[in-house]
Image (cartoon, protein in one colour):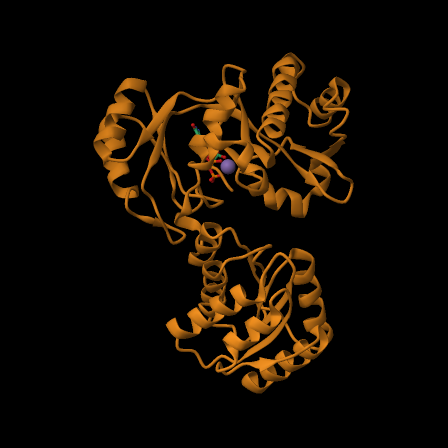
Length: 380
Ligand code: GDP
Ligand code: MN
C-alpha cells in the first residue's frame, strides 16, 4: 500500500525528520488561506499516487495567496496521468542548493535492507541510475544488527555531504530507518532531501510503501489507503480476502492454497499455456468467496479459459461447487471451464455441478492439458 506524500510527511514529522510547514487543501479558497498563514511563497503539490508529478504539471511554485488560489483552481479537478487531483498539499516554498536522494527497501536476494543514496537526487534520479550508476551508493544493512553509525557515516562521506551537516544527515537517515522498520514498510524514500540556502536539511518529498501483509499490525494506517488508483479487481479481491495477482496470459486460475496455485501456474506453463492470474481462495472458502473469485476472473477480458483446481481438505468441494453454480447463474459466459475437484465432499460437489457445462479432469496434469488446449482453440 502506497502512502500519499502528505501521509509520508506526517510520518516523517513523527519520526523527527524535518519537513516544510504546510497543510492540505481541497478547494482554491483553502489553498489561499493556507498561503496567507504561511506568509510567503508556497508550492502547491497535487496529491496523486504516481511518480513524476512535477514533470506532469502537478507541482506549482507561487508567490502570493491570490496566485495560490488561481493556480489551485487550475490543478484541482484536473487529471494528472489519468488520476483526478482532489487535494493539494500547500507548503512553504524552500530555496535550496542541492537535492539529495535517500531511500531504503527490501533486498530479497541478500535478505537485508538496502540503503540507497545519491548526491544527485531530484526528479531525474532514474536517469542518474541509468546513465551514471556510480553516482548511486548502496549499503546493505543487516536487519538483526541494525543501521550502524559507521555505515551512516560512510554513506554521508560517499555522497559528499558537507561535513557540518553530517550530524543532521545521519540523524535523518536513522530516523527514516526507524520509520521503515516500525511501519513494516517495503520502501521509504526521501527525494529530494534538500540542503537549503540556510544550510539545513529538509525533506521536500517522500514516498512510503507499506507491506500489505503486515498492515494488520498498523490499524491506524489501514484507512490511509487511497483506492482511486487500484483496479476494481484488486478492490474486490481485498474485500473478500482473496490473494489475487493479475498476469498476462489467458487461462484464469481458481485454486485453493498458495502452493497449489503456484504449482497450477507452473504446470499450465509446462503444458505450453499462460496463466491469466494467480488466485488463492484460501482454506475453507465459502460459496460467496468462490463466487467473488470467479467474478474477478471472468471480468478480465483476456481470460479465454478458466481452470479450477480444488484440493479439498478444510475447503469443502460442495461449497466450492455452490459458488461456481451461483456464478454461472449470475453471469452468462461462453468461456469454457475446466475443473478438477477432489477431496472433502468431492461426490457432493460433483452432484451439484452435474448439470453444468464443465470439462472435468481427475488430475492436475489432465486439467492443465485440457485448459491449455481450450485456450489455444480460442486464440487460433
Ligand atoms: P515529484 O515530481 O512527484 O517527485 O515531486 P517532488 O515533490 O519531488 O518535486 C519535484 C521537484 O520540484 C523537486 O525535485 C524540486 O526540484 C521542486 N520543488 C519541490 N518543492 C519545492 C520547493 O519548495 N521549492 C523549490 N524551489 N522547488 C521545489
Ligand atoms: Mn520526488
